[in-house]
Image 1: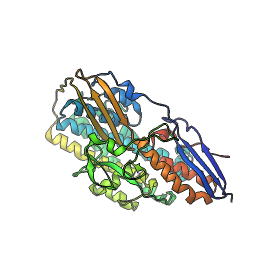
Image 2: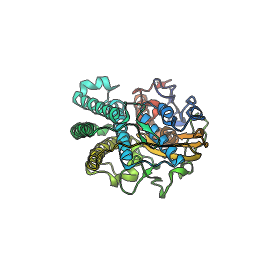
Image 3: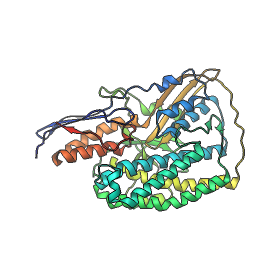
Image 4: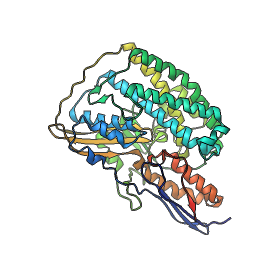
Length: 432
């Protein structure tokens, strides 16, 4: 079998931005391996300058069609922190409920439509129907539920319209929340079916590990996606959200137009596996049971297990949402008047996007108009880590042949659930 490789994946199509894979090897020796990101600038940080604090979340929600709620929440929290606005307990809980809808929506989309075909040896989800029809139908039902959930709380499936600085413009009724709760309870059967289906082909998950740093939010009381401070498994302490730049330490890479990040090591990873590694003991019992099914334990350093962590988190957000609805309705829903006024200020906001920790920072003048913005998305924070994974992974699989190398490199990129590949399953890998 030839040990010469010349792999060049150029401009992955139908994605937000572009990503290239470059591997050159001669006589079994890797000469060059690169994860290249030639993304065009999006200019969102410039778009919001001069705009009122009330307009920020509407604009930045368009950064991503998958994580629009997450961007809206992070930006709204930053605005509120900068202007000193307080959010009621009720509004805060409904926002978390809104955020959980997108976690399920994104996780089940990625696991069900993009990652599962790899595990089952199918080129896409369409031929997967013939192999595992019941599982595909379960994924479709879960995805539909997540979309309906977003519609109810956020006002529509993507680009929320019920958020505003200081609170919400509309809240669901008690009847609507009870109906949602019933659907969430029933969805556990489908989540269990998806978990068991992936477990049945778990031997197709590559056995690859590389020690790296895992960065996420952490909270002392619960497995958090929304509140808390920043931490990592390499740091005995926490960092306040306003100091996020001391964590990200963004820098320019010659092979990428997107900035890379690092903290205590040469790279770090964010996402479901990072959150699991920092917060696993705080999972609810049903989510812990799913982790045990796969042998997923705290400290796991296999990036491919990020997909398993997404299944674990899907169970977590459904269970927590069932509980949240009970808490909201036990207290009773109240109509709330949201008032805000402009003032000068600067602050950051942070939430966990499905694919990792997300930072928004804004500065406003006395009229409440934005004068500066800085946004650090999770995919950019993972770029350096993907590169380091490539450098270790390629020499380990170089003897497996072109088809295996191509497939495993595709799976490695997809395991991170990056924005650059979230809308397509296949990567166009060419061997020359």
